Length: 98
Image (cartoon, rainbow, N blue to C red; front, top):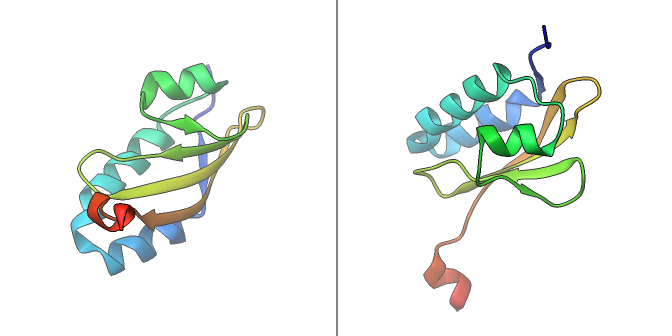
């Protein structure tokens, strides 16, 4: 049996939901799914979250559906540790074009 992911850095999720309460449900769902996963590699991660983008072999950006934010993480596949490095609000498309 594969071990479930160990999530470190929950405080970033909490801080983001305090600042943006509308994101609470989507971030809680992302956290629940991530913690019940047992990713061994990038393919496992992409099977769970198809929109995940790997910036390096272990640095990943998740874009939860329904909210304008990105969760930046580091994943240690060999130990099953998922570290949330930051949760940031994405700027609107209109702001990005300005």
